[in-house]
Length: 219
Image (cartoon, rainbow, N blue to C red):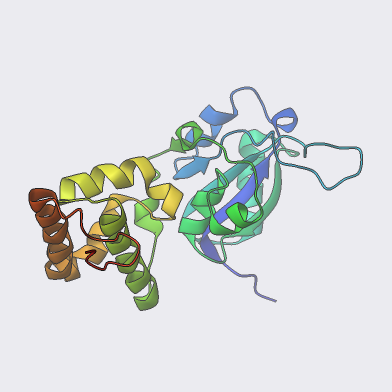
């Protein structure tokens, strides 16, 4: 039976099972890789155990479609025969998988998992999550609505303010990098301009008589 092939994979690494120079060895593989912060605060469901065994989540981008066995063997050649665990194809979305590296994905947030710092993510060989995110029509509509809500809720008056806000807080709202946002907004510049202009007008003329919750003009 033919095995499924893909380009995007994820797997676990445990510190005690990998060599000290494991980062450098992964980099020498020459494929884009993203490595999570060390997950050492994941709560355990095992009685008498507070936290799960510390581990790293890794996202691996193959140059061509390959099998999970192929990825496993390649990692084992680089890091040792007992180095890698749970090699899986990224079945849903790369965006969600990348956010899971720090437990900022929607499912991790819903389960109240410990949040790790995105500044501790390690990127190798020009890994750029924006290159691997594909959005269908519904995803694009949802993102457009989310961005319009951010402009309205946080009084962002122009693209520079939106860009700075997304760089600082985008992951908190489940929004990927600015490249993906730009690709969505490019087809809706007129609508976005209307939102920016509305914020600017309120700033300029000080519309303090508007109820921010209902949008109604107060007496």
